[in-house]
Image 1 (cartoon, rainbow, N blue to C red):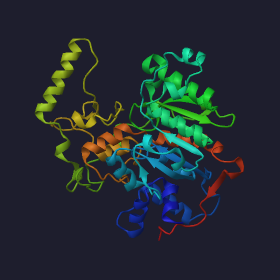
Image 2 (image 1 turned 120 degrees about the vertical axis):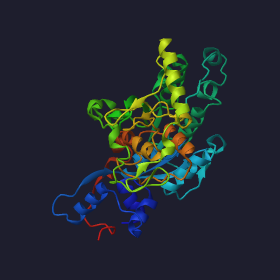
Image 3 (image 1 turned 180 degrees about the vertical axis):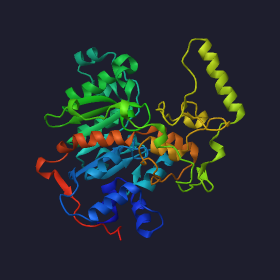
Length: 407
């Protein structure tokens, strides 16, 4: 198998596989176990449904949506992400045989390749639905060309109209349905169904079934051709039995190799720079007391190994207040390290460090806070798979020979 095939099989970057092959880094234990199973195959092989389909990755960030579909046989043929720091992280972790485009509003529709699936985690922006009835009566431009003009959803709708992909997946914050008193979602839904003719489904999913973080996001799925897809039979583990924070924290006991600048020393203890200063800790405590006295719920989120965190946000780099990790001794609480954030968002497995973080802590916190929980996307992707290609193209994959990485 090629490096790309191995990377796709395990949902990791090509650079990770290259490092394993060269002996620079050892593969994670979960992958070693799978490789050993493949090498000692003596019965039915592990089976995973895959299909051949092309997709585009809009508002790509660091590739959270892509990581759900690429392992299922998807091929990314176009990427758009305007932030140069996010582009750097994206390219460090994903093989691209195309340039990453910048501002999607400046990309000609014909410059975007044909694709079966459109992925987009577009920003939530208010629309204007005033005067629609009048415009209808006067036969003036209306619909999404009028209502959503100037918003980034407008560009998504244009691409859907022009290329007519088989399916799409849009991801957004939970409050999209209530944004601007429901007007935003009204325009989005009407555009996708009445104007563009897609069969649309949506579901709010809490990532804490998969990762130790309370993170609710809406996933909007659409299909060009009628089918019996439904979110009702999407299997999601109980959030009550989900993982706890301790599973993604640095153990600080020597069982993990040190990774500068996050951990150091023989036992790979977390660097002291992540511990809050006395000044910041006093400020956050005072701020919390002030709002508690006023009857508000604002304050920091102090968590331990048995807890589930609040939602990691893009502002985490400012003071880390939403997720502060208790420390065993008398030290002040600390922020999560960017590596722990990668695990909290599912870009890394618990204990893993395969995801490449080539940017500063500030940029890393922004990127992870703006991204999606990868295991949730994987669950949705698997649920959509049978409709992403012609039914006869969806086949079980059989790992029948030992990968070149073993031995």
